[in-house]
Length: 305
Image (cartoon, rainbow, N blue to C red; front, side, top):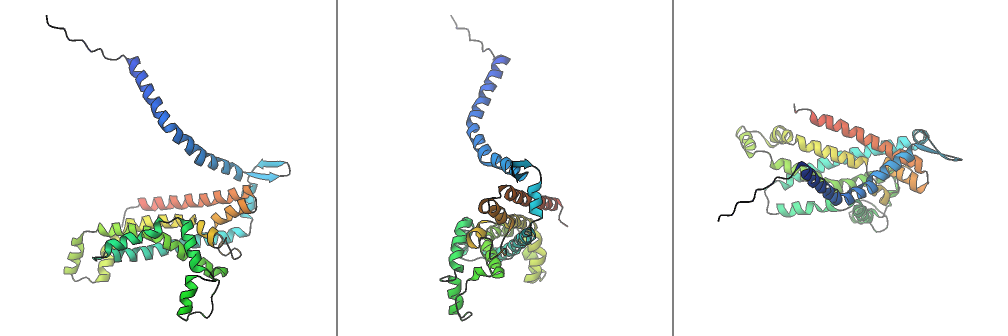
């Protein structure tokens, strides 16, 4: 006698809901530890530091208010730190664009050493800012630095100099070290943009007898518009938030000549013990970075002319 097939009973709505709940619980169990770590490492310090910036110390403890921000805006160091921060960001932007574009143009030329050059170019960018500071600290050292040795051998100086003890020189040398570390990123962005340009456009321009400068101006630069925007944004934000090089090489000195907002906030909190004022300085810097980022995003949304 033939066996009757067993009918498949679809799960009830309650069973489906229970299965979905078990799936959600499993997902929460998997990502729960990561959420706890993020909340503990990122969110809590942000909230706590914001609370610190909105309190001011008194004889009886601390009270809620804007006294810490008032102390920041009345501090004579603020104009100096603001000037240095914007100037350092400008140096980072100009230096990374000029050096990055130049290196990208060279690495885009056909050469048997091109692959080696591209790999070598990424070494400074792969280093941490602390490692960069250590390397350039050796180079700038006033007793045995490579910069002194080179200039002395070339006859450009008659004695070794403590380059970082002069305010203007120290600021320029900090900018040079920073550009050295960030220019490879700009090179990578520009190089990817150059490789996206159709070769037919250059061939057509050569047929029209356009010279090298005309091809660069009317073909290369327009095609690199988005690359310029990316490098501009990244370099400026990195410049605004520069800290490690200042901390490792100059400690904001001599005087306040290399003091930027990030260093000033750190020193105020951890060197001078004014945690509330230091938090206010760093949140003031955060507001500047957010405002600059909003301006950049609005500019990037505009269509090309």
